[in-house]
Amino acid sequence: MCPPGARRIRELDLILLTHGHRDHTADAVGLARATGALAIAPYELALWLEEKGLKRVSGMNPGGTIAVAGLTITMVQAIHSSSIEEGGAPRYAGVASGYVVRFEDGLTIYYAGDTALFSDMRLIGELYRPSIAFLPIGDVYTMGPDQAAKACEWLGVKDVVPMHYATFPELTGTPARLRELVAPSGVRVIALKPGETWD
Image (cartoon, rainbow, N blue to C red):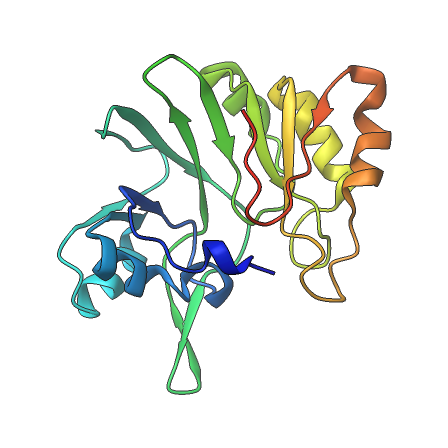
């Protein structure tokens, strides 16, 4: 689904990996090599990146916070599996995670990664007060729109960017369904097409 103009990335400062599944790691090593970007990942996944020859890698675990490139990045939990397939067998890649990122201007976002709904999203909302949440809505492998709507409520966000949907048939959740569910609360659903930006 990647538009042709976005297939070659020339400049990249950071890569934040949430877990080891190939739809999240397939291009990570090549992009990091080509751009010199710092790769941040759960500890065991960071070790795998180093095995692949990357020099600029920072391993973390949920609860940890680092300051880099003017950002404050906190790794938070996610409920999901995490493995890398090598030699036909899955290899443990550490715990799945999400990130809370605070920008220099104070804007705070929550990138959930692939996850189910979990009650500590209330704590993420209370502790970090994100304005924008990036939430999976596809269902089957992550939460669907109904659970994402509840996550918006618990997080207290004003805007939500749906992700992890419509890339293969099992992912049946839609931005339209999420929009319908959060409309009474006034949360804005920002459904971006691949390659699109929003300001």
